[in-house]
Image (cartoon, rainbow, N blue to C red; front, side, top):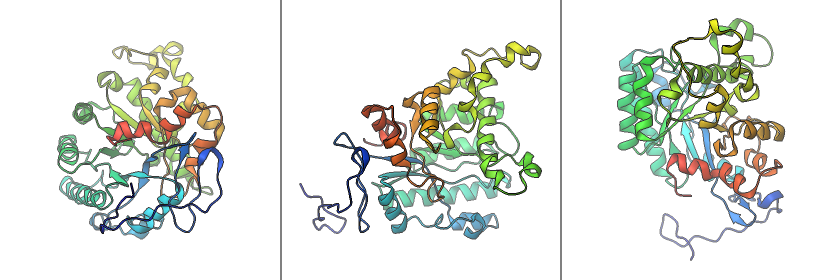
Length: 354
């Protein structure tokens, strides 16, 4: 049956004029949508790591879109849809990196209110293409609980996007337990995106944008390590966490985490009795696939399990030119595993029909 468009007219069938690509992908030609298939089966691709900003909320903190350095963060319309079509991304989960954690409570609350309402509006305009994560004021965890609940139950948001710490406080601090408890109760995904490691700003100076290149993966590594070693993941075993950039450096050197309390027990809290080896907790969290090479993707899958991996594009920041082909062309995965990474797992986490 031919589908109808929003005007009620019959939509023309999609015709591809591009060349057939590896593993069943076809390139978008003339602005047409690039579809992804695995062994002849059409796959719905879902990107959990896609940025945007709301200029009105940004302005409340004295910022403009230009302060973010990257173009198109404030454009969530036809241009973004065209970029998604070219990438072969069917659905993006929009998130806003927290810039309000050090603002006063009432100002931060207003920023998050505006953002959450605007995110819901964006999703309503493109219901088949966009979902979104709520913004929350974690400096006031009780308020963050209210915002998460309202965002999920009233606005249709699919979870929350958070940093990797909040105003110099680690997420394993008991003050954040009510927020983790509510996220666990609601069964929603919390997307962790780092904000560099500002304590090292002096050493990050110089060439190479080290505050991001090194600082972001390190920030995530510290965050996840605290959640593991401080027992937070034991306290909230059903918490659904997804980390950007493949979980930072942690999966690359995770086995070292199994040994510090044996080698130097005086550096470990005898009151914290973990229920598993530290490396086992990696397999209870989720990670995006933004790790650049087939070797890194295979290693990440080995450490955490293919079932824990989801697409992350970082759109519109061009860290990876073709995240879908990255998954399709990495050897060693079965068809079912590719389908899961491309969208099957994310669909379950975000409540999207596959």
